[in-house]
Length: 254
Image 1 (cartoon, rainbow, N blue to C red):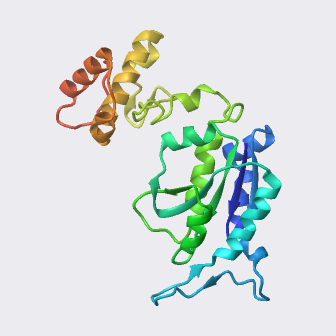
Image 2 (image 1 turned 180 degrees about the vertical axis):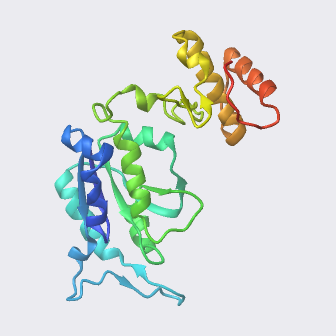
Image 3 (image 1 turned 30 degrees about the vertical axis):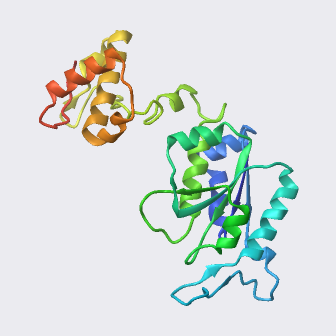
């Protein structure tokens, strides 16, 4: 997979190549990351790519021509029809569903907006998708872009040390994740739930499913509204609610 990023701070985004799952994906030849500075496509001595908004108002707006020329250079290198994604507060919220969708394709182009935004003519002519990191305004699209790259990279074959990790994460099945524990068995005046030490894998799986359902019920009930639960899941959720009806999050062995 190839991911191209258009950003005024290519060195910032390119640091991902040195760390974590993105670095591992590059070393495993499962991922290619290319960063482009639209200032390189500016046609003025100062490499300026922004100007004041028509109609007045505060701030500056990224100009359409330098962005279009940068995208043209990317297309020439890629030689494909990879979707162009603009990181924007006006976009659809990025979630695991989007990560899965993007990971299934050959790659994409991320446009990191800055200032007051991007000239709408570029968006109208060249942008296929607008995505947002959430209901918050950031200084630019770089952080959301890096979030998307990380979320997608970890879904690629051979990137994670254990391929099961991506399939068992929060949101992978529409639920939050279950709690995790590691050695020592007793720490901070608390013990690991006995079921996890039992060696009974069916019991462990049931406990994890119940706790994932319970965590979602406690913290993100909206996610449950979008799911069709199996009979077993309904039973486990009912058990959790009966045990934790006061909204507490204490550990149980059940």
